[in-house]
Amino acid sequence: MNREARKEYEAQLARRRKMWKTVRNFSIILVPIIVIGVVLSVTSSDDDSPKASGKCADVETPAAKTVTLPAPEVSLDPNQQYRATLETTCGTIEFDLASQQYPISANNFVYLTNEKFFDDLAFVRASKNHVVQAGSPTQSQTGGPGYSLQAEVPTTQPPYPTGTVAWAKGPTEAAGTIASQFFIVTGDGSSLPTPDYAVIGTVSKGLDVAKKIAKLAPASGDGPPTRPVVITKASIRTLGVVPPTT
Image 1 (spheres, rainbow, N blue to C red):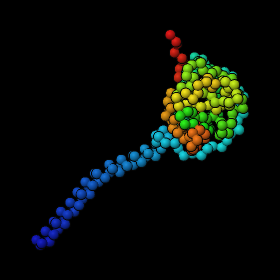
Image 2 (image 1 turned 90 degrees about the horizontal axis):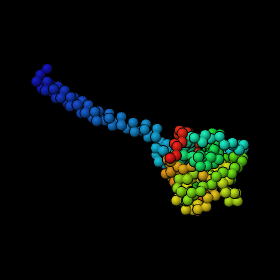
Image 3 (image 1 turned 180 degrees about the vertical axis):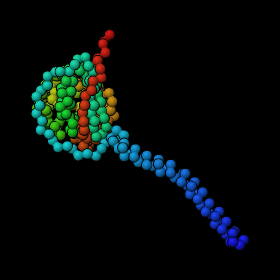
Image 4 (image 1 turned 30 degrees about the vertical axis):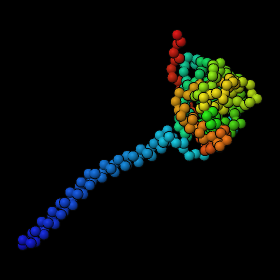
């Protein structure tokens, strides 16, 4: 190999080394970016729930149900605390049942939940700065479980502060009448000054979800939500023995 050929060979070798060094450095930068992108993509797909995204899932209103249940006997343990969880397509709402103050009312909610009555029921009413309402098997404001009961009405003032969960009833029904439709107070309760509705409990988590549903009120301010919102699952759990009063 003559001198000129050797110089050309060494120059090519130097160019190759420089190229591979550039590729190596670029790979060091690119690989972490790809890994981060994959992780974010997986996380995004896994966290596409209403809770994670802060949005309501796009769903159809489930078909109406035909349900006829016998009225329940009061069977709640008066020494236990109970919490209800509603998993909805807009997020999760939890509320503590007022089983000591309103045993008939709380017992009815536990009974219907254990019967899976509320699963796949839509919210049938969204009233701006007022309430949201669900619990009808016909997916309208006229359905019920096939019975009605007389339960306790509140004696506190105001009777229905923000976050109160109570049973809905028709305007001609007696105060305290309960069936299966219930509402959650999302406003300040000033529009409900008369204690006509039996109380179930108070929201402990997810009031923002209920308020999100209330914002789906129609242009009139009160009526079916402008997009379907569905209770996918309702459940009850116990929180332990009621602490003694002092």
